[in-house]
Amino acid sequence: MSDWTPVCRAEELPPGSFRVVDVDEETEVAVFNVEGKYYAIEDLCTHEEEKLTDGPLEGCEIVCPRHGARFDVRTGQALTPPAFEPTATFPVKVEDGIIWTRDDRWD
Ligand code: FES
Image (tube, rainbow, N blue to C red):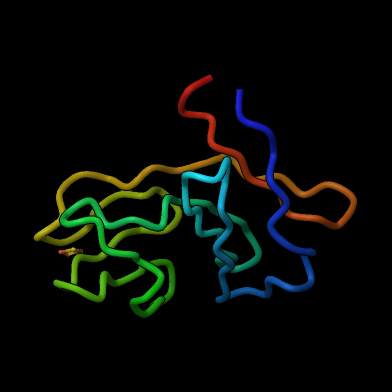
């Protein structure tokens, strides 16, 4: 079972921003603040494995820098071609003012 990984202090992630953390030394997880709620997705485009956070964040959508597929950071859903598969989502919690995430896919 994967351990929770600290992301940053809550005040360091204001609405409209994100942080990327390495979880379990194998998964890059991007944690977003969308209008005061936190969401975590794998920082990986499901089209050709580009790093999503190298592209622009527009509201609740992140745009892959390679071919322009859009993903909803709240759900991981691919919204536009050429990506069709969702990227993974992860749980987020706030404890003692710290934001945490973990990779629960293999639990
Ligand atoms: S690699 Fe992301 S849209 Fe092609």
